Image: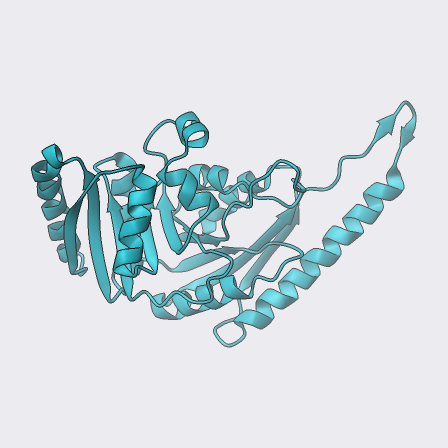
Length: 275
């Protein structure tokens, strides 16, 4: 697998300099092209018998066009030291996650910020990151807002023998191949340590065949897996976490909290997830 096109989700009315910097650096290291993508839903016209608030609709469309123009100029300016990116900006009645997921047909990797959450926020500008990860059919790299770079000195692969984790590991190969160190970690109760070690041995051998030298270890399970993963990431000084998305039912993830939920809504470091 190779990564030759990176799609960057550009948020309107917000600085995306950090995303552009990370995308530009990754593109140079992977010899990849970049596509910037931004979208917004228009306000829905208000109908009251024969009355339509046309002025609001027109003003809203003009504001969206202005935001798209500003975002395009800023994104290309930020990426000027690296490349001249392609640009896709749109006004759409689709959900923004659906629109970007459909456009991801042109990319190998999607880069975005975390889900900002909250029902009181303006949904016309909001991309539901959970929906994007579920729909994209591509790996999604989620970059915390305060993250300015991705040095790829130490990557952590969160292993669980599920379809999602296997998919994430495969999708992450191009990035893992340029990491300085890769560590594969499994969290398990003590009674399952031997089984987990056998799985990790297979994973590490598979990675070696794809030019990724990796270490591995099994960690005792205590407390929520998400908290344990955060502890391991911090102890290792990982700047990237690779994980499968939604190992359990989606309803359980959102109601009870889980690894996927924490990685999407409140990542402390860059996270590459696949579904």
